[in-house]
Every structure is written in C-alpha cells, then in structure tokens.
Amino acid sequence: MDKEQKDKDGLEEGVVTDFDKDMSYGDYLHLNQILSELWMKLILHELTAAKDHIEAGRLEPSFKMLSRVARIQQQLIQSWNVLSTLTPSDYMEFREKLGNSSGFQSFQNRLIEFAMGQKNSQILAVFRHQPELYESMRATLNKPSIYDAAIGALAARGLPVDESALNRDWSETYRENASVESAWLTVYRDVHKYWNLYELAEKLVDIGSQQQFWRFNHMSTVERIIGNKTGTGGSSGVSYLKKVVEQPFFPELWTLRTKL
Image (cartoon, rainbow, N blue to C red; front, top):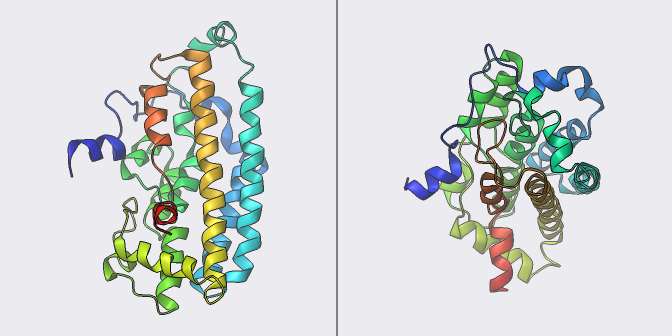
C-alpha cells in the first residue's frame, strides 16, 4: 500500500486514541443516555434491514428503507445550518472545556460509514476505552457492507463479477473493481431487463450523495468556525475533513456514468 493510500485510510499523526483517563466526545455529551433519540440510530436500523433484504434476494422491500435513509440524512444535513451560526468567538468561550473530545469520535457516524463500505480498522482505537462500543464497531467492521450485498445481487442475477469482489476481507474499505463496473454498466444499458438492480443502484446513489453532502457541510461548518486550526481530537481539522469528502461511496456507480 503506497503512502498516499495510507494517508487516506489511516489515522493522522496526532489523533488522540487513548481515553482511559481523558474525556472523549461521547463522555462530554453523555451520548449513551440520548442515542435512542438520534436519527443516526434509525439510519443504522434501516441500513441493516435493507442489507438483510438484499442478501435474501428481496430487493423491492429495501427500496423504501433506503429512501427513508436518504430522508433522514437530509434532516441531519439541515442540522449543520444551525451549527453554522456558531461564530469563532462563541466557540472559543467553551473550547477549553472540550478537552480532547471531538466529533471525530462520533461512533454512530462511524458505524454508518462502515455499513456503507468505508472501513478503517484504525478508527477502533478511539473507542477502546468503551468496550461495548468497541465491540459493536469491530463487529460492523468485519461484516459485508450494503454495497457488498448489492454486488452479491449482481452475481445472483448471473452477471459476471470477480470472486475477489464477492469474497474479500470485509474489514477493508471497498476498492473499485472492473468487473463490478462492467456488471453495473450492463444493468444501466438494459434498464427494463434489470429494473430492480437499476432501482437499487439509484437508491444507493441517493444515500451516497446525501452522506457526501453531510460530510461537506461538516467540513465547511468547521472551517467557518475554527479555520485551519488542529481539531480538538488531535486531527488536522479541516484538511482531514477535505480528504474525507474526496472519498466517494459505491465508486462504480459514479464512474459508470462517464462510460454510458
């Protein structure tokens, strides 16, 4: 793996991962007490249910679930409009109280990205001080993502897909595969024959787009408030978030558009 890929997949030098004694973001906000009310928990529920349907060959029930995920993501994206009203001087009034806590430590957002195929085993170190969350993260890391399930659906329909894309190390971020792109191109070139697979692909594009919008709004809000300062959790802040925005979900569903 070259240095550029390591920079994308790994944690940046300086990111705080030891919270045995220090307060983390979740500790600061008492997240364990309020998670049952958060939209992200519903996203995870719907993604899991949709993946189960896809793996069982029941594509149509998954469409409603993925549409619901996209609507919830829109709600989360709008929340940045409220946070963006925080000025630099407002933020500095409580910055010191955050310690090493940071949005970088949002375990539910990490679970969502794992479920959508953006895996990073090094992220688990941030949650080692919370065994229950750590095990939940580790379990999701080692399961197929919803995109892996979709690729399996391509193969189940008889479209040729490389074995390396069907049986791989699920803990690794999905990488583009030429056979997967070719299979999706076949779907998009004969929509009537492969309508369910086409609809599935477009639902995935919807949630991938919304997650990217969420990432962008996160990045731009942070830049507006703290500029290029180092993040409270030890990351490089805005420059790290900009790199994340450049990492798309479901890559072949984007590259195929150029080739149609």
